[in-house]
Image (cartoon, rainbow, N blue to C red):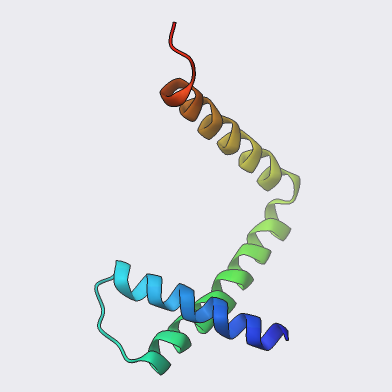
Length: 79
C-alpha cells in the first residue's frame, strides 16, 4: 500500500511541478518526476530536521504564528 500511495502522491506532485515549471511531459515521465522528487525532498527534509532538531520545530512554530497573524489582520474583525 505505501508504494501505491507514493505513486499517487508522486503523480500529483509531478503534475503540479511540471505545470509550475511550464514543462510538457508524458504521464510516465510526470509520475517519475514526482516520485523521485518526493524521495529526494523527503531525504532532504529528514536531513534538515535531524541536523537542526528542535530549532526546526521552533522556526516552524514562528512561521505558523506569523501566518496566523497575517490572516487575522486581513480577515479578522475590523476596528
